[in-house]
Image (cartoon, rainbow, N blue to C red; front, side):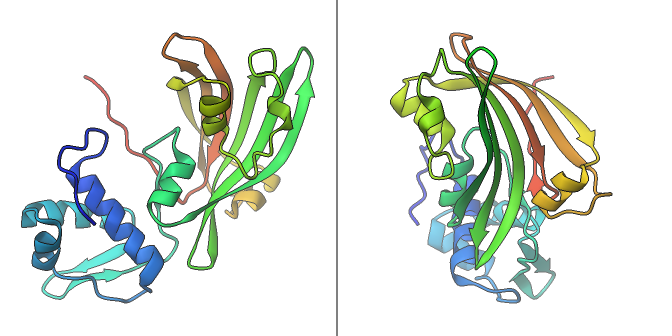
Length: 231
């Protein structure tokens, strides 16, 4: 993979993480040894310290084990999926070499043209499906006429909004809360009923502050989060 050092929306370190992660998911199995830090540095034309930071990121994702004096090895047992990109689930899954999987649990119209969409979303990699989120979206059919006719098991909601309605989600005002899942939620996300999870609720708006959707997302324990905040 050629690293684009001028890429604005993804750092060199993040590009390396994505490339190694993709190679692990596509071509390697648990216990396989990764190339050395110096080999990666030469391959990506970066410093060894940059490679070390990228491998630390993969260790944090629980995809590899780093053993002093021996090297790095594929762990790949229930890998943690980095949910740093709230609005790019499908794009991120494809980027790391996994297949995004969406199951539509409910699609109905309530009251005055309000579309309620419930989805179970995960990724398929190495023959296994990892469930990641249980989503509920509320959207206005007055703003998006005909949206209820789309098959969101096969299409990305945000990609549809961007391409078919020329609406571009830009900001999210969110509240993050710990919850205990119901029996049904635990079964869908394949977690224990007594496993605490994170629930995100709020609104997504365009850069002009027009409402796109109201959301409720429950994340499984296979999701990692990164927050960057101003202080």
